[in-house]
Length: 395
Image (cartoon, rainbow, N blue to C red; front, side, top):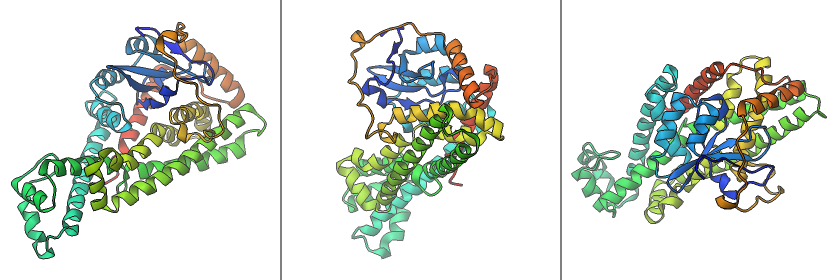
């Protein structure tokens, strides 16, 4: 594809676009950007600059010229290239490390450091809980449990001791396999444990749904186009909330039976982790949507945000068809278009098109006021710190 940018107008988008993962960039024109692996390179999926459906898919050199990324965005995009796969969890871990180095501002750096400590602490707690559950479910007499735990020494995530190896044999496991199982499962299930990020995010989604319903009833003419857009946004939020709630219940039930969960991992790691994987994919990108809304302190600020919230909500639904309330009755997604046969057009000036689109939205909804890019970057860095803070819920 080189430095070309592909566009799919209207609803005719390749099915592969659904694989895009939300990327927490801070530049104004990278709002809602997503990424997907294509061979050894990353396709960056940018929202249609006109605000309509479809997307632009570009390599980073084009994104850099087109969207004016911040230093944070440049560093993050560079390090994304080293990931073996693009998943919400992998991107979150990597972007937390980038923020901890200060590239998204001091507040985000502090939040990232605290989030990493909290995540590590919760992973250790889950690791110990899972192992203890295996011991209790084993033939090892209860009178020996204390002795067994003492024999573990400094064993923990990523560290195997002689005591751990001996215990693994008594439990019927290979030590290396049990160590890998405990580490993978404990790390994967951190977001749903106790006051984890997924539980906090679902609470915020519920709050967002209530707030949008109130805005819709009090401040919009039901027959207007903005009211219709807001109504669809509310449906998307409600649908995601319902689906994610059901997925969280499944993941919670899995974690409530550690021996069964670990035995399932033993034969099929992907299947064992699938309850959390599905939840991560369902809620990918919704943290920014919720936090943008909660960050707005006044009615005017909230009304200004509605077009952006509507765009981000639509992008989240489009990139995860299961999250769309119209999924069952929508027009089928077109098959993937080979790169050589795709229509290739020059990318329009995003600033001009987006500016015109926002003026039209403002005339209809009292929408976002024009703001200098520096102001939007500052806001996005503030939101970035709040996103990182979702992982700091374990105390």
